[in-house]
Each structure stands twice: as C-alpha cells, then as structure tokens.
Length: 423
Ligand code: DLL
Image (cartoon, rainbow, N blue to C red; front, top):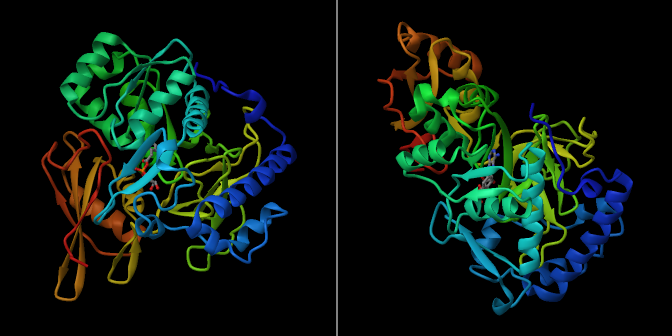
C-alpha cells in the first residue's frame, strides 16, 4: 500500500492562519525586492502601495510571457549575473527562449518543493527513481534530480528518449519509482508489452503536459503503479509548484513559496474557489527571478479545504487546458483535453490520437486520427464521430489508423495537435 509521506510536515500541515501570515510577510518581501532591484518592475509598481493584506495583491498588474520576451535574457532578474547559480530556459513557440535564473538559495527552495512532491507521492528514501525527464535547459530532469537528492532518493538520470536503453535500465536496475511525461509513460508501457505488469515500479510522478483520468487508469493498470500528477512551469520555478499525493485528490500547491490566484480569463477578476479560471502565481521566496502575478495561461480550479492526509495548503485540479491551446473551429471552442475525454469513453478506441486542423477556403475542418484497440476497428470511426458530435457539438472527420502510426512521445512532451491553418 502506497501512502503519502512528508518531507516538511511542520510546513505542509501548517494551520492556514499561520500560513497566511507567512505568505503576507513574504509577499511584502517580494514586492520590496522587485522595487529595489528590477527597474522594469519598479516602474510598473510606482505609485502602488505595499500590500497590507493578501487581497492587496489584486492591485498589481499581471506579468505575462511577453514581458519575459521583451526583457530577454536577464532584464527581469533581481540578481547580478555573477550571483546566479543556474539558468534554465524553455523553448518559445517563436524566436527566443524564455530564460529563468536561480541563486543558490533558489535551488535549495526548488529542491525542497520537489522533495515534498516525491515524498507525498509515497516514494521512500532509499528507493531508486528512474528520471526520464529531459536533462538540460528544460527544468524537468534537473528539477526532479535536485528534489530526489534532497529527499534521500537515489536517481537514475536517464533523461528522455532512447527508449531501448530505458527499457534495459528499468529491467536491470529495478527502480521502485519513475518520473517522465505521461505520454512517455504510455510509450514505455506499450514497448514493455506483457512484461510491463511484472516490472519493479510502484510509483510514477508524471507531468509537464496535460493528461486525463482515463490516461492515468491505463498507465496505472499497465505498469502496476500509482501515478500522481506533478505540475510546474519554468517561469515560476520548474516542476514542484504543485503535486498530487498518493491519495490523488488534487495537486497540493507549495503555498509557502507560491501564492495562487484563479482569475477569469477575460476580466482578470478572481473567481470563487471551485470555479475554473486562469492560474496566476506569485513567487514568495524567489531571489533571482521573483514573479508577481504571473499569468500562467493554465486553466484549473482550486480548493483551500484541508486534504485527508493533513496537508493544509491549497490544492488545484488537474489542468483542464490552456487558455491558448484552445482551437476555434467554425466558432466552437475546442480543447484537446475535451477530445481526449470524449475519445476515451468510446468503446474500442485506444488513447492514442492526433488532432489535425485544416482550412478549406474559409471553413476550418477538424479531423481526428485514432487507433483501434486490438480487434475493435469495426465502426470505430462512426462511434468516435458520434462521441465528438455530442461532446463538442461539432462534426469532425475521423481517420482510423493502423495501430502504432499515430505519433507517440519519444521522451518529452507530446503535441497532439497539428494545425495546418497558418493563422
Ligand atoms: O513543464 C515543468 C515540469 C517539468 C512540470 C516536469 C512537471 C514535470 P515548462 O516547460 O515551462 O515547465 O512548461 C510549463 O507545461 O504552463 C503547463 O501548461 C504545462 N504543464 C506542466 N505540468 C503540467 C501538468 C515544465 N501536470 C507548462 N498537467 C505549464 C498539465 C502541465 N500541463
């Protein structure tokens, strides 16, 4: 039986009033740091008073990805270049990457957050963690590495890709735990085939891309593990902003370091707990790259109810999508995650799919490439089309492809949408 453990029980179960006092004190520190050390932010904050309550946060403007681009590479850093201990970057959709920096203290905070994630997931000190997140500028590989080391968990730094080697190491080293993207966990399970059930793994810490409950069930069943969802983004620190525990009941946000808000995507006004909106995060302790009200673009809801394991920090739902991965097809909003939900309820459809968007004259067309489960191809296209019609209110064309032909993750994040519209 895998149970949630703790890395910092004092902090993870801190009564909320105490936590909120700590947050306010730290928020004031972040605002002061930005005023004193980041001229671009000092200008933006000019004339705005310091916060005296957590709600005062709403007075400040959002920070957006475009601000990072405009101040490329180090313009928003609060430390001099020689004071940095690490730089990471994520590839932008166009042009320059998004660059983030860490001091030594920042790396310690990050390690502490990820250690909480791993222990909460039920991974025990002394176990081995097969780390299949990419090492390098991407925060996944090195972020999980840091956290595992802080928690006394041994790391196999295999990184992403080279699936044959991954399978060999999984067999030969017999790790109890694994971390990688959920789509890559599917690839590994698929390639392990019948031997998957007998593998040594017990816990998977999967994230960096959207996945559904159904996908979790398939991964858990195939690998005989419990699979928890880990969330984070480079701009805020990397993996470890939040993570489910082994109870798999919402992603616990490391609220002593990151202050969450959920706001309406159009108005930017807060939505009530439980309602879906855009997640906005403020860092409370970061030194090199403090972020005030960072607009993540990720859609989720949060609850501040304490968790059954005793954790008091707010929990977020799995992401329901990103404000910007929404496709608008003939006026209908379509999120890839909706398609996935609908698809996985169709009898005989495998979880592998790809969305293909084309434009015929002025009309957008959505096609879905799906694969059948073994021996289930009969009338699959009709069933998928009917499920999409009812889930999306849209008619889509469905192509049933031979098993193994729809793109799989080869190690990193899987992009399930091919948009050929040149918008
Ligand atoms: O993906 C950090 C990470 C590494 C998280 C390893 C978890 C595990 P970026 O490359 O900056 O950082 O991408 C951040 O990925 O804004 C989300 O849209 C998406 N994302 C991250 N985690 C999840 C998740 C890393 N659990 C962007 N579910 C975020 C859905 C996720 N989407």
